[in-house]
Image (tube, rainbow, N blue to C red; front, side, top):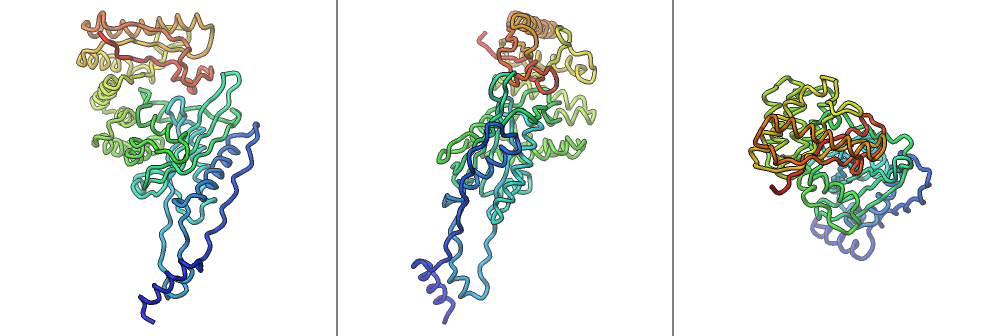
Length: 409
């Protein structure tokens, strides 16, 4: 019988129900205990996500016709669909932490175990453009400092259509949740949460059947470069890391605070002071243009003096110089907003944060007299804490930030 006739016969047999039936899909997991810990929550979320995904036509296509495989001497090879896992972030801050890294590790591990017929990998420069599906996750603190829990949110997106096909959530206890920012975020001069990060956070919490954030998806190739740059920076390989940040910064879609933070950190560590100052100027210019400039000026406890550690505060004079210069160039007026962590009374923190904002304002006016009368100090105390843990250490450093908010002149 000619080969074409064999194929026609196989197709007819398949259409009449002689194909191998699709594999059974797993049941969704039983409800999670209120006392669940982080590892248990991750396992639950991944299993729930997979159980939902395997019920969708997009994720679980029909298997090859059994008749076709029987009639052909060499059955056609099928390439495994690739499921990519993006790095999770803390939804309150946009940072990566010890806990989000554990979420990444466990998610990759569990997905590989749950999906033997799929390939599973991280978003990195080797596979960023090859994925069929994308897992996006966040870890969100909920409750007060005295009674904190965390919620894991996880979504699976079909990258061909941009539609979320499954989502899962799990609430876990704070015990064992490491909120310490990773080295890259801990040492970055500016908070890098921006429109792309917000899109990532929205996608992680999106319902099945809705669209993932289009800007976030379009910037996955840049995210892959950033991830590799972060990885090398944290391995103390700034010569390798800077190449990835430079490649990202050279692209229009790479004009992101996270990219410039990475460039700045590497240039500083490589003792390229003029380049680092020029990069910090780009951070300030982008922050002012998007009205999203938060710089981590750290103060001595209960004081308006910058922290005494020269490894941290030596760069502050340069930071202030570039903030003054770029604000003059932009002809901007702005509020200088001071924040404090949750230690002491509300009244004391409101007054302290106001004094710190005024200190920064006066330093800027001393560097550029044109700014006199164009800035207004505002003290928020701990009303707008991002972390809110009240630990007064590296975990809640963002709660002691100074923001610069553009306002009408």
